[in-house]
Length: 384
Image (tube, rainbow, N blue to C red):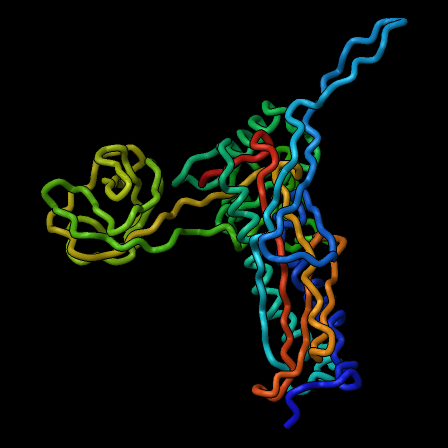
């Protein structure tokens, strides 16, 4: 069996077809990424490269009197934002009959969809994680997102002088449902239908108090399970094997318990201030209430947060930068193409090469990018 492929054979590998189809699918899966500031280029870069992106800052409006000179300014906060291309995500598979796959739309769609879903989750999760570091806050943990929290988001962004246009909120699926069931928004929902024909249209809820609201499956509904250490009933303090990362008033639930009579699994509790530490906490049945008294020692178990970190932002609050990847070496038998999506700004490379071990063509979809906050004043965490 041949272990290399010549130029004549390589002509049947058309990476642009695969990249364009994957981007079409990926575009429908993301809502935050296309709505922050974007800087993208198909030019080839490497992992770890640093982009130097100018940020103009702000200017003041000066008085101008007759027969006086204009006042030249240096923008306040003018800076160079450095974005490191430190995220390289790929999804690779093997197609045995590449010609048939490229000719058959349904076959290509199955492969492209699988790759697009994997990459969309990686990119969107990274963008949302950066937005979730916002210092400004509206809403509270343990309480479903509601109209009052959305009004609070509008006020916070407005007080921070964020322009009224281009504001976005990305919320969990659970909070999308809670907003649609909020009595204070009942009249709004009677006259509003989800947007169609836009990026993320299937997840668009409409404009609520000045923000275009989108639901995203990438806003986690709960945190990862944290293992419990032995916790004595004598003091009602929960000890965790590693730092729990909770905040006071966080909603939590135990997903497993050995011992701990008086506490229940799959029940919402709240972290209280008493005995709160990096690896210790007490919990109550109500926010800020009395500690639950468990009457037997806990010898094992797991707990996780039920708090949801929705986000509200204006486009210039954060930036995601995409770049192309380098071409494969000449004569290697591999072909590649970097394709940029004008709607989302995503640059995807598809690399194709015959793999004699697998008896088919390796198809790799990959993206190179970095994410960074630009203006804290235009970002907000919507707690729920």
